[in-house]
Amino acid sequence: MSSIVKILETNGVAPSTESPQSSHEFSLPLTFFDTYWFKFPSVQTLYFYQLNESTSTLCYFTSKIIPKLKQSFSLTLLHYLPLAGNLKWSSGSSKPVILYAPNDVVSFTAALSHVDNFHILSGNDIHKANELHPFVPQLISSDDKVEILSLQITLFPRQGFTIGITTNHAVIDGRTAVMFMRSWAHLCKQVDDVENPSLPPELTPSFDRSCIEDQARLDMLFLNHWQAFNGEYHDPTKRSLRIFKETEPVPDDTVRGTFVFTKEDIKKLREKALSELDATNGSKQLCLKLVFRV
Image (cartoon, rainbow, N blue to C red; front, side, top):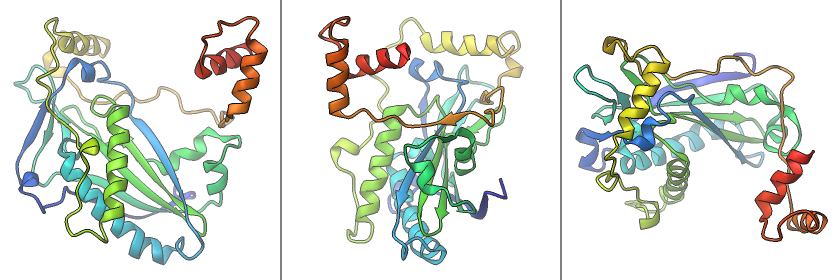
């Protein structure tokens, strides 16, 4: 990895102290929506941001971009306190909890890419799948504690930068991840011009889990399944939060690519398949049928 990226700094970003909320402990119980994904491998996402030549220098990156991203990220964490904490499993608890405590931080890494492939990786062309791996961080996990969120910002000089995010699958679902990124983007736009940046109602998260009913105790059913799968069910002392990792590395000859279907493409697909498909098939169904036929 050192031949591909150079780590400029790694530190922790805490929720903003501008509100007393960050000085109080905050916990959330896991529901069956969470324990279903309990041991799944972490979710890794990579966002690409193109810059012009003057704003994609190392000096501008370290003096302007990184400080602004850190400041707005800290403000965002204030609204998403659980994501700044950890997933913990105490000896006296039947299941893990999401726990934020004062002084908890999210790992934040700034890096510099040594390879000139920003436009290849961010485009639709075919490229090796493992070429993306150096630009996303790992979550630190142990038997009794695991991180929920980790970030890596990587500069590609004279091209742009990436934001690599790794999240705990049991805590952050797709909607939460999208809301968090939209909230971060919203506050990042405001941070230089607004004295007290805030989130609109549609980006303000709710942590009320009292509305989730689970009379069948699916939460424990899923959790016990994972324990049994990991050989922990009959020995409570062996309970572990360690996340399953991919059993095999991605083969070097595995590739990725993006295939774009325009409205005109979808129209032609529908016309071509009309004789053998139900007329009510939507765009997604048409694309899937084409892929599986190929």
